[in-house]
Image 1 (cartoon, each protein chain N blue to C red):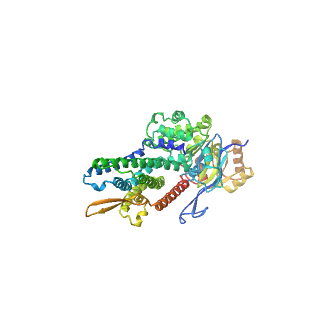
Image 2: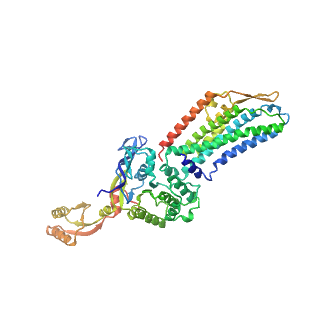
Image 3: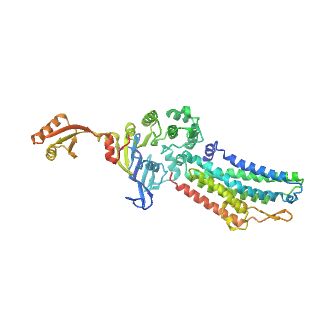
Length: 327
Length: 259
């Protein structure tokens, strides 16, 4: 059965003009391509993690989805409605806003009016979104801000501002929630609360959530699907389960004759890889392992060491991005 | 946009933008009142030309205060969107053009109220002069008052358009306030050179340009004579065209801005 996608992009690209000396990139001299032909597919009812190192293009992509930045090229479809085609708007701005009104967002830093109280901020948002003010108490309770609601937002800590931003994004129960690094500035307890809240949104409030982070551990704990972006390119996109499959165990082997050992293993149908004098192949049943080792010994290959290794998500991320992941 | 105006009014709660205009009005009122009460009974030069005296006086006072007040007002209306990155959220919920226009309309309402109150202040102060100097009533020059109202509104609105655009692009709001203070000083300065062409270069100086009264001073007798001058209609049309251009540029810049 074909899945419904709440966000779909095709060849989404953003280029900025830069001084000619500064960059001669793939995009050509004088331009810097910060998002490069990204094809996002965010399934309905999922928590989609948008993972990438700082400066990878996460915020720019999310801003393009929200129409805050004009794409240089590519198509954007949100909630089944095409918003842009080949970088150009396909609809009247009023219709585009009708789609975006079904979307809550928290991009880069929380949006608030510093001179107004938390509650007054939400009242403004209620009016902008055409939502009854009775929803305010509900979202304040969700983000645990009931006690601070009458304090001026400018006096809030960054964590409180994030909570206020999230409360605002949740007003009107949008079908889609775009959260850019929502745990920034939160204390460990707050981070846990935020994760728990995000994780439950699809089930409890029928929302699809796209959440960006540069923290793999964070994404690992709250998402169903993951997209990995690096240097503007989407290098991985699939379910988190599939990503975990990449981290399956493998067996490592050191022998006194690696070339012969590779031949023997391949003759027995084992996909083997050599990396710095170490042979590695997917984990097999114990009986099969015994059989393979016996075969090697029979062929005169001396087995020096055999051990089990598991590739961590961090290793996979490093393989994908070539950057050390923050934990 | 009509939906956004009440929301905008809620947003500017505790920003006291109205207080800026009220303060300017009060300063002008008490300044003029002080000047009137200092007039001695022998200050006969003012008799029969009370309106002209006040029209010129208020053009001067507007050139001093309004560029600063307008810069501060535009800044207070715009920086609420920039301080807490609210513009980002606003642009996903409302049309950019409506956001720009709502602020402009709100500024226009303040300026309209200011210009009306200031124009209404004129006959009141004329009565004070007449009571103080026991002078006979002077016929109200309705056409001159209407032109004073029109020119104050127009020049202020053009300044507001410019200041709003600068404020929407300035995170610290130092630049727009500097433009306001600098404009006030230069605008005032330009007024003392009525025949110099550079007075037409600065929009802040147009409070003087559109004043329908000029002054003739005889140093020997210390007599001051005010005389009406025709309203520069062609210059006014040119200034309005400049205002429209400033609006188009400001709107285009805001619409194309990446947030």
